[in-house]
Length: 309
Ligand SMILES: [Zn+2]
Image 1 (cartoon, rainbow, N blue to C red):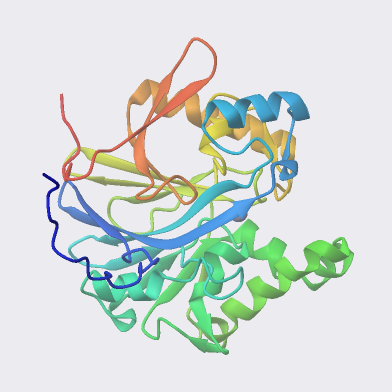
Image 2 (cartoon, rainbow, N blue to C red):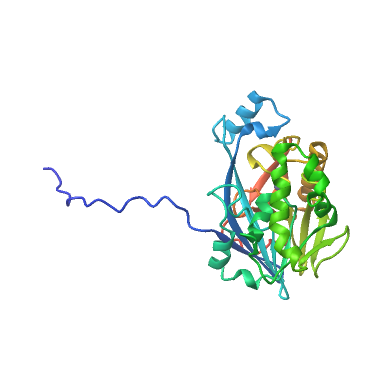
């Protein structure tokens, strides 16, 4: 006898969108909230230092289409220090297409308003890190002072550098200038020099190469640490195993590679938790040394506290 199933009613149409993302973790007394801005797709040709056939093999091994695109996340990091509410980088807003620009939505979802943020630290001044600062010429974070390394500001805000840049790269200078303009106009754009501590437990660490004044930030509270490394990695599928692969947007490829190799060696040795703007959301994890190259070990969902030995 055939089973009689009830007549099927068509379900609602598939929704197709993702839930906005944020992820929380404690670093000692600091509370970290990772805010997902979205993702971007990179053509494999943007990566340099690996032959086409090796790249295809590498991507295939990582279960990615051999001809790309290579997905890269964009994350921003909110840090509540007890005294301050700091945002590290501000995402891409509308500068790089509709798959990005969710920092503000996710900040709201995480329980904060843009006006609650008093300090913004920039790792560097590329558009996918600064465009989220301004909306149609107005400051998105009206109560915040924006900080960046002096050598980074000098590079991107220099009219002569902009004029001499190849035409395809000139847009980066404009995005940096436009995003910072409302903060500069109201005296809320500041630069720091090497070795300065910006707030108790927040130390900028120079990581030059990707841009001239690129910096990471070491956050330390109650003996626990997180190193927000900025743009040390754009493709986790390629660059952990092959730190010698650079990306088109590096200002100085040789220096960017040397910095990546040094940072990998340091964080693998110290076992510090790291956070990356372009690592898969929530962009938090550890770096393990392998026989050849390194391996990314992401945190598991729900791991709110840094493991202590
Ligand atoms: Zn960048």
